[in-house]
Amino acid sequence: MNVVRKRILLSGTFANEWSRELSREKGKEIFCRNLCVEIAYQEEIVYRIHIVEEMESLAPLDDFAQKVFQELTEYFAGQRKDFTFSYAFTGGTEFQNRVWQEIAKIPYGSTISYTELAARAGRPRACRGAARACHDNPIPFCVPCHRVIAKSGAMQGYGYGLAMKRALLNLEKL
Image (cartoon, rainbow, N blue to C red; front, top):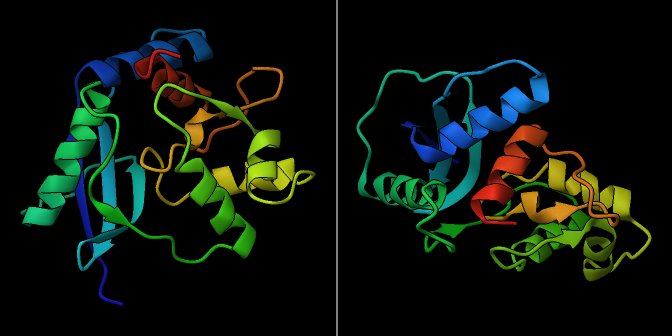
């Protein structure tokens, strides 16, 4: 599989919100961080979206990468609720794929519990498995695992940290 990988640096209001949440979490001031996002795609289908620590050399973006990054930029600016580009899951167990499909159905501005997610994916007693599938989600933001919270309403786990999860939920006004 000839997968293309591209990175872009995103900044602005969301990076500031993420900084505030990180500062609160760490108990010390953390100044605005840029958000470096990498996408992996083939034939105009995204297979992975990942936050990376550093920006490598800026390679020219093709039309598809420009579209994906434009939509991500709009999402992080609070101007987009849905994505129009295609994505697909590679790997993952049958259960993880069902969980990811159910996560994709959670509307913008809504949350569900890990228990409810497990039930929607056909295994009501597998809330830990659903949580693990959230952690392993290869396409965060588009498949919004940040919208899954504890049954009590508490924030629990997120692959990019609770500060990022809170910032994303704040972005969606939850």
